[in-house]
Length: 165
Image 1 (cartoon, rainbow, N blue to C red):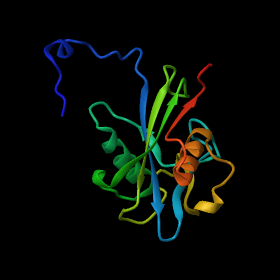
Image 2: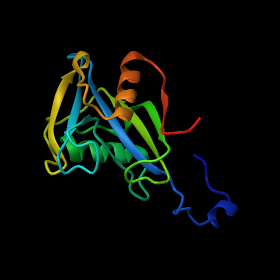
Image 3: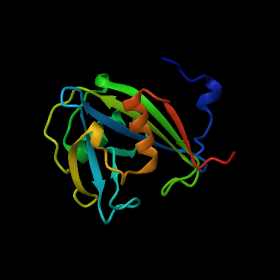
């Protein structure tokens, strides 16, 4: 594990230009060949009515694996261990609804979990569902659709969104 040097310890965090850090989880039931998805509700901050992966913002002082585990359980009731998360994809966006300085979404895959799939945040999501990997809905948030598709097809593991050039 890397430790900060004395020079790094004196630096103030660059909170005015920070990129929003986000975690998403692809819960992939390998036996049934399905994934857990949620549909954004009418009061969602963006992409109302669109399907998405369980995804959420990193909290200060929280490791990204902790964000993934926390958000997945809050949104779906499914519980995974950080040790069961596998890096699946990274999305780097130039800007987002809550991220004028950009966002970085680290997408994990998990094949082991406990709990039952439930809508843990009905004010944000209209439904959650297990969806066959061959029947992923067209009405899907574009950035996470790319991540999910790349994961399922063993494609690229990094995607860029809204960058010029």
